[in-house]
Amino acid sequence: MPVFCSSCENRRAVLKRPKTGHSVCKECFFWAFEEEVHHTIVSARLFNRGETVGIGASGGKDSTVLAHVMKVLNERYDYGLNLLLLSVDEGITGYRDDSLETVKRNQQQYDLPLKIVSYEELYGWTMDAIVKQVGLKNNCTFCGVFRRQALDRGAMMLKVDKICTGHNADDVAETVLMNVLRGDIARLRRCTAISTASEGDGVIPRCKPLKYAYEKEIVLYAYFKKLDYFSTECIYSPNAYRGHARTFLKDLEAVRPSAIMDVVHSGEHLSVREDVRMPVQGTCARCGYISSQALCKACVLLEGLNRGLPRLGIGKHHRLHGKILAQEPLTEREERKLRAVDF
Image (tube, rainbow, N blue to C red; front, side, top):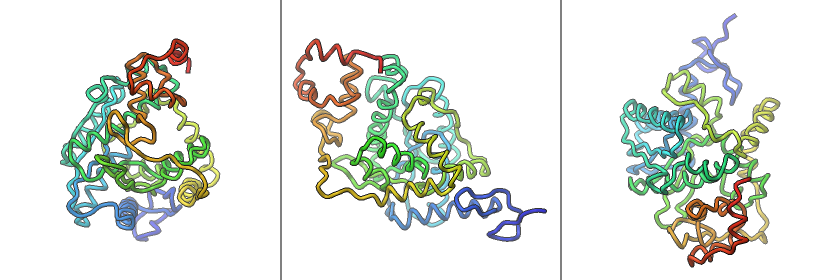
């Protein structure tokens, strides 16, 4: 016996929404998904009319759906936004070069301007070269830090007012779990924010229009809309710490489908005692980027790579920042510890 859409009650249902459990037809699913994103944008006041908004585009399902939905809603509700695509080329052969071809097709499909910035032009390193020096265990630390700053630098080149990224509810829940497991109170307070206010001169606010969208529903939306996206996993990510949080979260979701949103809401409502000391946000003495230390993480990682000391940016080596700034040589013992690649 056919199941009819629980929304329109006229067409046959083709899917059961993971988020609500309702059986719906394609048309009603598209409308519901888009309206939920619209509600998120309006209720959080993410954008103002006339703003130029850069969409972080990787070619994956999240950023492709974000670009499509933002274009649809911008036209449907007359947001008055000037949208453009911004991509980062990390320099990963067989992965990023292929996904950027998808981004270039998206540029044509959505008729949006595209800017690509690369690690090589910004830092003088590709991820392939970084992995050769640091190994496979902590390479995601380098990539994550460099990518965040690269996206900001690209946004500054384009003079955008805001950046929006494809982070979904699953991503936010994973980050909450990771910060709880690491005891990182400072990041735990920030990671659930749907929008970051400007954190200093030259730092462009970011927002997450898909914050309350389930990853499964994003996949279903892309599938039924027949969107063009790249689905191969990064060749360097299997050892990423996030993968353990993701596996744990998926196990929770199998038992309790609302677990993802429950974790997100828990993160939103966590409070910190008033007497807990939090890092003071300042600026990097070398590049001017936001940092709670004398040098930002990107500059420390880059210094370690350029000196052949890959451990410099991994772990707590803040006491060495003064020496780096003063261009003082490290002791033989310090160099010996930092040259080891068995991490």
